[in-house]
Image 1: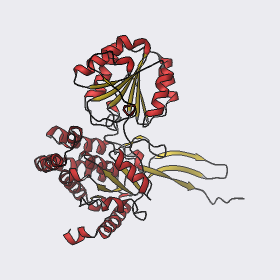
Image 2: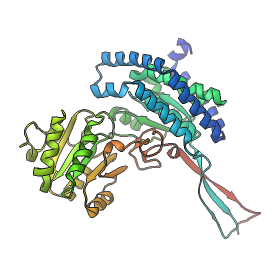
Image 3: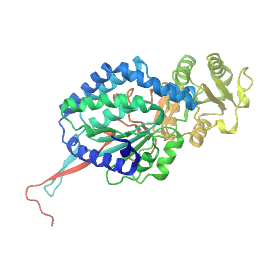
Image 4: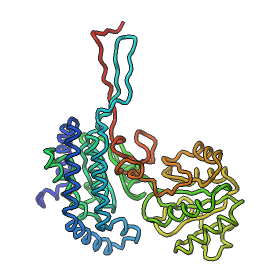
Amino acid sequence: MTMKDLDNIPALMADIGERAKAAAAQLATARPETKRQALEAAADALWAARGEVMAANEKDLDYGREKGLSDAMMDRLLLTEDRVKSMCEGLRAVAAQDDPVGEVLAEWDMPSGLHIRRVRTPLGVIGVIYESRPNVTADAGALCLKSGNAVILRGGSESFHSSAAIHAALVEGLRSAGLPEDAIQLVPTRDRAAVKEMLTMTGTIDVIVPRGGKGLVGLVQREARVPVFAHLEGIVHIYIDKDADPEKALRVVMNAKTRRTGICGAAECLLIHRKVADTIGQGLIRALIDAGVEVRADAALQVIAGTQAAAEDDWGREYLDSIIAAKVVEDIDGAIAHIRQYHSQHTDCIITEDDAAAEQFFAELDSAILMRNASTQFADGGEFGMGAEIGIATGKMHARGPVGAAQLTSFKYLVEGDGATRS
């Protein structure tokens, strides 16, 4: 790739798109064991290159500091040996899964003599546009390959070197298995013009998956002519019901907020039933403050020392930091009404021992993921048994929630007859 090639972004992206389309045609019929071999080899190559990967990551961390990235963004960007190991485990987990391509979703016979099967088929070419997290390079590459799709990866400028080092290991895996190296391509420039180009490549890209902040996702949704699987903000609520178990509430809320504050499954708003505001509620608020979390509280909770007054824009806000909004609600109906008004349809949770309350919460809210008595940090494809995820889709079309290999397929109908004709 020459500097001249990088100067002509439309030509560069058109070439990447055509090569991806050709690779997708080969991948669609690749044998499951061949794809498995490629992913296992990629995991081996990534682990062997962990030193180079972390050295590349140091360059990105320096770049992030110069840009003044927040602590949460820097945490997303950081690669440690444990995180590289997790990426390798994710590659192997995806490799070990059943291959979704060709799976028969349904089949039936018609009185006309037709036998009809609905089977999974790859989407084709997937474009993934993401910010900060270099691990998305491995996750997205693995899931697209497993589902028989070619992928064009456009990582954030801040993870440029890390993504390139991870991508090299994925290509090594493809090469070792005899699969086309163009099956997983990484856009080799930080130029934002490449993103805008991807959004209009209707002839070569079948779907775009944006993975990042509101600004990126908004840009993609406004300007894309290619279909989009939107991964919006994680404005995650936890509602403490009047019948919550105090120990479960403490354990779940502390994990949901403090385990990793910069991920989309981190809790951002705590809603507390009025009947337990002075008991469980006070205990939770004090525990959060003691853990270094800034609690922005409504008037009813500001009596607790150490809280700060919540402003109107604290409701429906994704902090991705050690900050949480907290509010007292009259009952479960008030909690549901608040969540409906302010959530992003990502993940919401109820803490309760009352089955009827949990059933109401699950029935009346329409988030992609609804939880009961479990940390919202489980909102992750790996934790759902998908090995990895390409994102959490918050829209309502096709894929929703964690997007794994199966969600990166469509289907086609295979119809067989024995000389059948229609009257």
